[in-house]
Length: 187
Figure 1 (tube, rainbow, N blue to C red):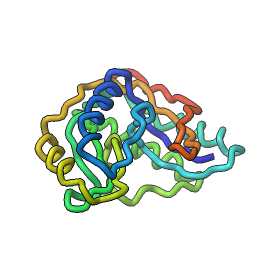
Figure 2: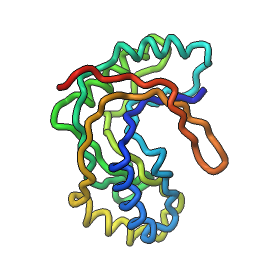
Figure 3: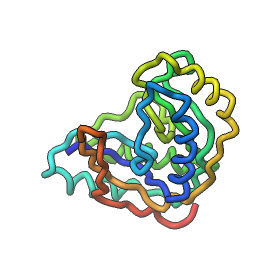
């Protein structure tokens, strides 16, 4: 099983992502745009794991909860940088540090099961697309650079995080929610 842990998105945020993606699609030939229904805020990519270990993983993740928190979806960016964009994203942040705390708790919870901590700094984001052919990106990069601070898709309360299975298909990955972990109380 190929697994990851993420915060899922409400319909109104998905609708805003779809609208933004549609505006950008015409400007970015050579970009493989993600299916908006599958966009999520990844907290930990776990990779492959035997199904027999799933119950132990769920038990470990149940210890990682934090209070509920509000997330704001805004700003445009790219990885690794504007000169050579490979991933196009919308930013995610929160006024309180609960998202980062939750991500660190998940890292610590799964480490005893053989999942090493991420070495890169946590940069919460929602991936809109991946650059497949870097030529002809100038109109898209120009648009994104001009709009990077103006894009604001709103806020939502994260009331849970989810363990997903990623099933690779010829036309893209399919994500199946395996277990939801409610966040406890208000921040």
